[in-house]
Length: 420
Image (cartoon, rainbow, N blue to C red; front, side, top):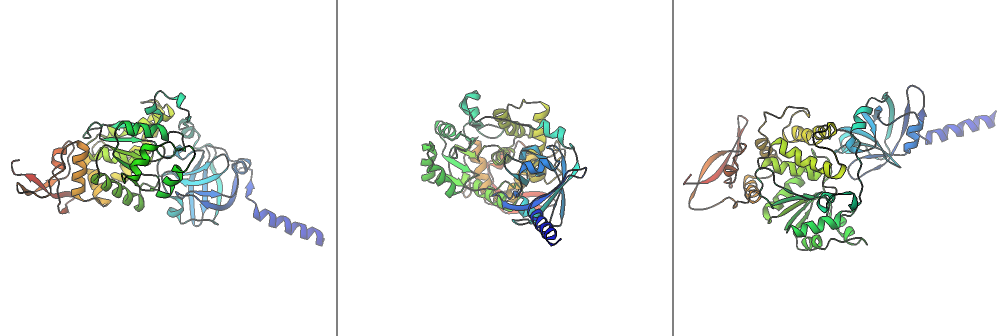
């Protein structure tokens, strides 16, 4: 009896060390967080096969219990299987990850290593139809793409208000993780890029890329050594104070340096997509223009057909939702047709720390016109409402000013020539 009791005690101890699993109607598995990744994603201590063996399937909706939080999330295979800002339980080849798409789960819910997380089945296949339509595949082989530009996701941004040959965006010309760095580097050189806004990397990561055997980005290296590249090491939580502060830092760097500009992250998809949209809308682009430029990445990488159901679903859940919630402060499904997006974006940029003078310089450089005057004998202060769609000439005259917010209207004391 003592031997049996000892065996049972040992078995109970072993069970406590393993993820718990219940296969019946109420599928359940629990485990411990063993790693918090760079962008705040939680890595569990059990394998994807353990989760599947417990009775879960991709496309299920789960209840995720962590600390005092009881959350709902679908079981998927990629972050982009859910809307920007939404929860997801992601199965990779080797890991089970709890995350917020373009957000930071760890800081949002105060969760770290050693925390226990329990997953229970809430609705079998409840997310399967949406999961299926979101599935995206791509290769990293140049031969599978129509051109170097498409392969590197490299393009000239020419939405309303932005002059031709001034602003470019691409996948990383320095990080060869997806095999495109040398292509993006060569295209940057061919287009005479002078200033680079690197949203993804730190100085340490840049040096690690340069030390790699496959490094082949000499033009980028020269720009970096000459102080023409700013590395922002941004997270993916677009709403965070850190992201906002680094975005302001990057735009200030642009204002202080010369065009042509290049904006990139790693794939040139999420962070670069949002930052490009902010700039485009600030310069007077319509919602359709900003969405079309954002979605060009999905056409380039995944062959998503413009106007298809998949195209609209991705656009709605990503860039349209981000514009609504982050720039306009509305619900993600809000109707933006009646919103002055240029005005909303100007307010957003002022809110993250840019001043009127910096905005004026940016408008001048991106539009290809001279930077606004800040001190001259032939100018006098005049109140300017900032901004109205299609009034870039007005915005271009913004100088050093005093910001006044009254009755919901933003008034900037700028400078206009007396002759106007």
